[in-house]
Image (cartoon, rainbow, N blue to C red; front, side, top):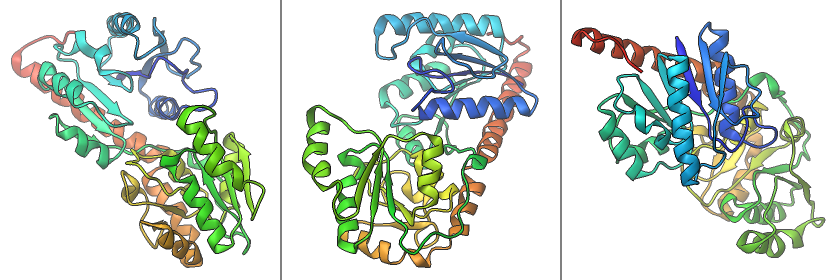
Length: 357
């Protein structure tokens, strides 16, 4: 198959630091090429992906109207030059606008809450040639309200990059690994650690201005360096692997509808149980009592911490391998591509037409 992938214009593929979607796109490109497919990429001009051919977005800002027009033209030009069998967009659906009338199969993937308006009009204008995927069934359920065909395909991790730790020390710390903001529940993690007498390592960046800065200064910073609460700042992949591997559990008691959260899969890959809340995609990631616990209040968080010895860390690793490994997720995308391309070929043949891009 000849496949053209797109990523948001703000960050290169792969990203130099943070960039969850860009990491997924890079893993997908590597996996598809290893399976013998030809892959093109439309992305930030500084991308260093191993795609067979790359095209640079003309504009670097997704929310800028002029850049949107320029990037729509960029994608159109890339399609004419690359002549793909299918387009898979991880960027804006608006960039697909001039191509929606084409019989060329198109996939729009959402890693966050989809816009009802844009998905509705995209479905209507594409006349059956646009398919949607969401990084969780939670996202797909939201998207289906606007119409169209939706398939849940989870985000993935490179399993081999995470070291499985079958056991940890009896006094192993808890770890909060995420952006330090209210919706991620860092304050609840601190309260639970103090109440249960456990050490807590907080890793991730935080805001300095506005409400985010106020949250950090008033609800997080006063606890640091006391009662076993430690902040280590943002971490790279190597540091993340080490921190997760030595932790008794990753505790991120979210207060929002999490679309997926790659860090949860990363923790499981290390064999580290997850303590979070049954919101958004978390019930799709964590099996309560097997891979960790989903809790609703501080009392339940504390109970989950006390019950961590009941979790077999092998089950956590197996969950990551079977459900969130790159090989599994790439295979799911590959199957979807094959089905959509075959369906399109059948429709074109029935109409006696020549495919046009």
